[in-house]
Image: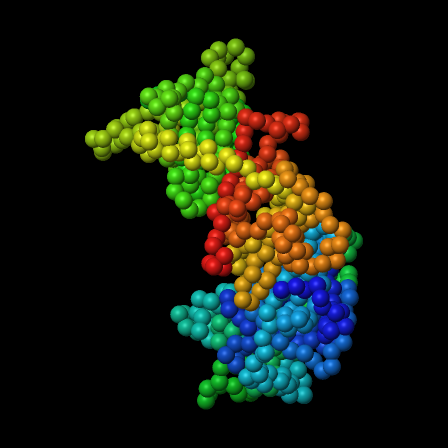
Length: 304
Length: 327
């Protein structure tokens, strides 16, 4: 019951955050359903949170040590433990107070292997939490992402546009073809189901929308709509507001990697002379990665 | 049985902007209880479960020319749907202000001051043979007169009114120690998020001015402690040796010393009690009734522009406590 008797030396990790909301945003972006088990992996470089679904979809949130005001790591190896993602996010969220810079301390493990959180910014009020952890399951599927060939197959698109396109594809639903072709350089999302819908991003027509494009041969893969949707369904509003881009890469076997950047910067004073790209505090970014396995059947998954 | 009065501008403002939106959060249906001097909005006083909320107004706070008569010592009570009442009042106000604005624009244009009348009537509703009771609002617009009828229950019988009065008398007991909530809005925000984590809230209140809230399930314990709050009633000096303890240890020791009380309440009830914030009270105090019978929250209203309690308005809620076994 008591959390007072913990010796600081006994903790693998003691770290402090000054922007809880940014971390809540980052973790929310991988929350695609109500009940999700997450694995947290601690290291000297930071904290990685991993969630998976039915061996077809994996998401990782990288919270590097630079995001923390204080990061004291003293474990041997890399401790891993499981928590309920929903509970973890809801709990962190209670520490985030609007209009307040809410600083919190995160400590692991507690006397009963709990994850301990506590607010540190006021002596007369204190919020604390103890989250029960569990021994994580072994990762069921190897998500090693390898390049599909000597040149990368990737493009960077405005996160807002990507989300909008994927939202629009809900209507045809079921499975979505993603086609990259070098001439003319373009990205196509095509859904066939209850009617057809095709969305094209043309590289030369709108370089603002499609910021980068690397493709030397036509590739086409099919992905389950619900997994594609999970990659953008909870993109935090700050990503859209900051006008950020998302990078999509197709790897060997058609594995799709989707990367987003979420700002975990301390809410800064308004700086009108800095443009909306938000490059102040460049290191205070959480990286989000999704790995989506393609749908495979006999006439599919052929790199032509 | 007769009731007729005119709503004052202050009364319109109190009900429309502050109390009806807040009371609506407590529950859709409440008892409106009218006596010679007071008007009460009462939630859950006659049935055991749910938050009891008691809003009391002196007649002058809301009405002019307040007339009431009944064979039951001039007391009338009935059940009313607060959202209907609010809608009717809101609509009548829009007509009333339109007329008043025009009236002011034309000097000497209309001598009769515009007012909102409220009265109890029995009417035949359309397609019915049976007259039904209504609470009726009436006012004049620029070119029209508007009447809004709010359906109400049959007035309570003499014995039910006596029972209501007895429950009201019982509910006036205040806890021995009350502590002042520092920032209502912040607390509301916090408890709103806490709702996602668990259903049962452990509330501990000490004579030192400490408020400790905790939700605990098999997977998580989440809590918040607020210290050095203002205390009204029985208080004690905070021991100096507990500064470095965790909130949980400190509360445990204070409870053992007999300087604190603790109860379990529903997180949803607690959140709802905080929503009374909409009535714009100037302060709020929490306290635990004797023997932990309930958690009481008392809202205090000041006379505008002063720090003196406005005795014409009062609002407090009593949250039922849960059996420790149910957590």
